[in-house]
Structures are given as structure tokens and as C-alpha cells.
Image (cartoon, rainbow, N blue to C red; front, side):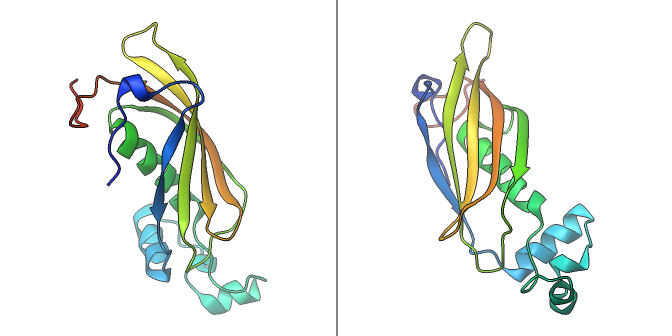
Length: 150
């Protein structure tokens, strides 16, 4: 579990704490397919995937996008995520361990609540960036126990 960040800790240039997911399993991918309704066989049928030119089944990109959303929620709270945009860059395979990272690129405290702009990525351990993205989050008042005060 990641502790929510206090509003005061969110400053331009601040690195966000890493959050790991995985290793990815074939079951994780199939469960996501069931939840999302994306039943492309390249994600669950090894023979189909190989006939398509892949070495085996590959993860659904939106699963990694979901991990980035989960990362933002863990840091700022479920009520805080205002926008999340992603770009898919590299395949994720069963066995891959994933690490979410982020940094604060802008902070606006002129409105209530204030907002922060984030630069995000999810990297494959031993690989490259699988998904990059940006997000806008609302900065709620966070107590010293990490719980939202709003």
C-alpha cells in the first residue's frame, strides 16, 4: 500500500514514490480481459499469439493504463484523479514485473482544491517504458495519518 502524499509535499520537480505490480501472470491478463470485454485471442491463446508473430501471449495495454490510474489513486485518493492520458510504447509479457514512476511537472494552488500535473511511466523491470502518460490530480487536504480531510 502506498501512503497518500500530503498537499505540501507536492512541489514542481518532486519525484513520486515508485509502486510495483507483478510479476504479470497469464491469469492477470485473462482476468482483465473478462473485466474489460477485450477478448482478442492474442492475449489468452498462446498458439494464436505465436501465429500472429508474438513469442506468446501479451498483456492488454489498458491493464497497464489501469495500473497507472491505481498508482495515482494510491498517492492522491480516489476522488482526486481529474485526467489520465496514456501512450503505449512497449509490450508487456507474462512474467514481467512493472514499476510505476512519476514526477510533478506543475502545481496550481490558486483554485480550491489546487491541482498538480504529473508525468507518469510504467517500466518493465529489465526492459523499457511500456506506457507513458500524464495526469491531473486535485490536491485535497491530507492529514498526517495519510487520510483525506475533505
